[in-house]
Image (cartoon, rainbow, N blue to C red):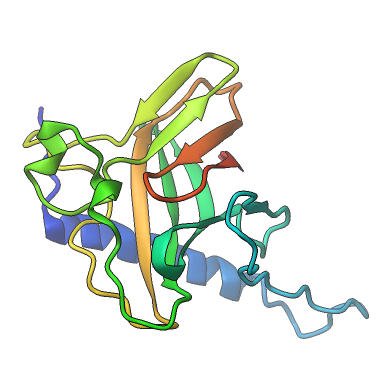
Length: 192
């Protein structure tokens, strides 16, 4: 049996991921009594040189924020292990610059099988240092990456949701390093 993911199916997967995240956020709202605790502040991108991406802990904070070229910031909000034997990394790319920009073409990687399908985040990898393995973005039967494709020009202050799917590392591996060409690298924790 072969599985073929069309653009419509990939968009549907992203929409389902966003809807699930929203549902979890609404489910955690409760009765309004916060027990006297102050709400946690959300983390915003820092204005450093990009060589030290921040890694956040906690349910409301991103797993990592990676600085890229031209004011682009990739915020990873989840890395979820699924029962099908893969990991879905989700987040958003924001334009923190003053001019509209495109995500660099280098993010698609340089493998012929992926590059022939256009712009994508197909060049992303997860590095499992403890087992000395690197995991590449999965592909469908036509060689298209199971990742966000055909991203629009991003206006200043705007962001676009993104996702990438990888083969799952062994169950005992929870921490991996996420890499995407032109962006800083960062350790992330896989949940699930």
